[in-house]
Image 1 (cartoon, rainbow, N blue to C red):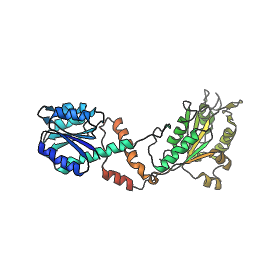
Image 2 (cartoon, one colour):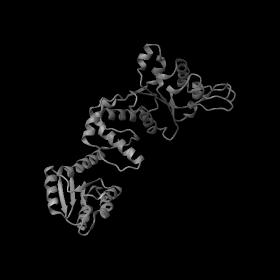
Image 3 (tube, one colour):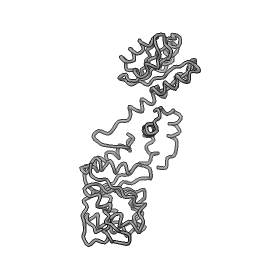
Image 4 (cartoon, rainbow, N blue to C red):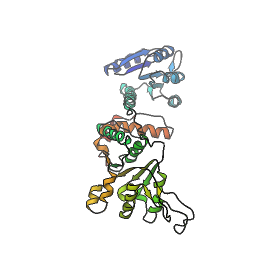
Length: 352
């Protein structure tokens, strides 16, 4: 049940909206003047306010910012006279949830209410996991909560972690959360995109090189493994590493020391390893395409990411998250999403 305030000097309209909203099991309060409406709005905890523009004692648009700042931060639906596009535009610029022209059918008048309440409910469901930093990780489903519990366990230790799952399931976000909640938070989080490493450059990128190590190496370069010293090294799509690099990296993983290209001196790097893959590494081992001893060391702790179709209950929260993100990025007024859109998203066969 929501609490709704209607501010309009048309007593017949107030009565009609009151009957309709109460039939929807909402609590309704009516005010026939702007001053009274503002007083009631600021003293009550309303979810939605229907506010007329032309009132006997003032203009509703001028009161809009004040009402929006009430403790309950109500969504405001502006009611304008027909053919008043300037008033509608001004309402939206000042933070109105929506506007409707009078006269309108009762169904057109309740549609903004349905969407506004849907938006407020979704906002209240966004609850972060206590004491766990989960930047960018959205969802409270049972499967997602299991992943977050695993993140907390992994972050409390310093063992190697293998995050598996289809593309788009958020493996890098999980890797970052492990780092950000661990004792290494604040140190470097170094990402290695294994799929983009070419055979000719992979050793230089990972291990670095000294000046003159090869033609064109006019200055020394510190590799990614060394940059991760004290922090976390994240091997994204580790299944793409060539067999020869797997062998070289295995020694680094065992001893935490390596020799840059062209150097006679070994250097150390006390990194924590998190790897991710969208491939079946066990099957790759059977097929002779991945080293079994490397896989054994990678998966000291494993996290399996669920695909979206296995956690459909997270779709409303994810939809709201990305809608708010992109509205903020492009300076757009934040709106709600229709029930029809949610239904479409819930029935889509998500691949990842």
